[in-house]
Amino acid sequence: MLGGIYTGYANRSVPDISVTEWESVLDSTQDAIFIDDMNGNTQWINRACEILYEVKREDVIGKSIDALEKSGIFSPSVAKLVFRSKEQATILHSNKSGKKILTTGTPIFGESGNIYKVISTSRDITELVYLRNQLEDFQNKLGELREEQLENIGNFIVKSEKMKEVAYLAKRLAQIDSTVLITGESGVGKGEIAKYIHMSGDRSDMPFVKVNCGAIPEALLESELFGYEYGAFTGSRKQGKLGLFQLAQHGTIFLDEIGELPLNLQVKILHVIQDKEIKMVGGLKDITVDVRIIAATNRDLMSMVKEKKFREDLFYRLNVVPIHIQALRERTEDIIPLTRYFLEKYNKKFNVEKRIDPNTMATLMKYSWPGNVRELENIIERLIIITHDDTILPQNLPNYILNKIDNSLDIAIPSVMSLKDATEEVERQIILNAVKKYKTTREVAKALKVSQPTIVRKMSKYHVHNTDMNLVDQ
Image (cartoon, rainbow, N blue to C red; front, side, top):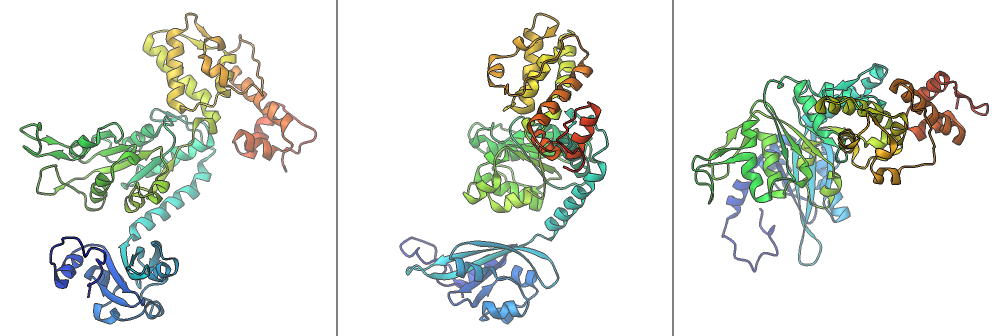
């Protein structure tokens, strides 16, 4: 029944395995496997396929793709897409009972260059789809809470509408014990969000273990994650060593920079997510672990999937409930409260009372912050250390910041002014300059990356008007 699948390997030395043995191997897998011949007729299915599609092997073998589609066993047929496109295809569809199934069809080509067989693998992802729907419900409810004031979540300062959405979503995900993927540029605060989710959930009293997948040498990463048994390799401890997953038992493991994980370890992480088990290096038995997994990356995992650098099945398992944190340059409203927070933090640390000149604050507002929140924190700490006077002036800023700021919007503020008044003056002048440049409040809102009602409210607050602009309807 399975003969000919391994065409092209005739010149290689392979074990003489019978068809019955191959069928036994494929029947033991958890994924449903469906094999179509070159004419689009069913050649064989495994036991998992019988269970998933609620059919009997003898009732489908020999039947065509079209016939099985008409009978409602599956629709559409991924094999039909493969025959049409002559390349691998993946679809999301349902079985008779309404279970959501992810199916990937892979073509096998003969020596003539034509498709010889199509191997389709299916997996039940009903739970993943359910969780995605829950996430959409959460997102729909965010609008009801946007007007609430939230100063911070843990050590993460929140001011902008975009970060409030992240905060509210993180708060809700803390109550759901599922895998979370946090994306965003380096330095945006992915680790703080991960820590907040852990501390706000039922596992808060248990360990929070952070792993930087890109900082540990590949040769050591597996033993660090899963530990090793006595005598597993040369140089190993005689008593063996527990892995980070075991150290995080009943708590949370934060896999930072998951995009740097080698392909061979991606398979093992997928196994942990699916089966809640690990195997130590040099070990023979599976060890059950109860760990929540939060992953983060600054890379485009979907592009990596297309480039075969990241496993598609692992991506979908991680991406059940994604959180994206925008760059600091895209949420400038957060710069001032973050600066205040870091100023207070490092004044206390170094036992000083430095203040920031309003014009310095205006300069910080105009900088693009490629290093995001981490860069801002480092700059504030540096300024407090190196500035001799009690007031941090613009000239105390590093030259690379002064050279890169956008001077198209000049802002001037008297130095003798409270920080609160200076903050409002910065905001007023930014809005005033934007109103002069754009014709409608919607354009102003888009340029300043806030909502149009926010612009209308702030223009009224600061008595900023433009007779050519309709404050409500534009």
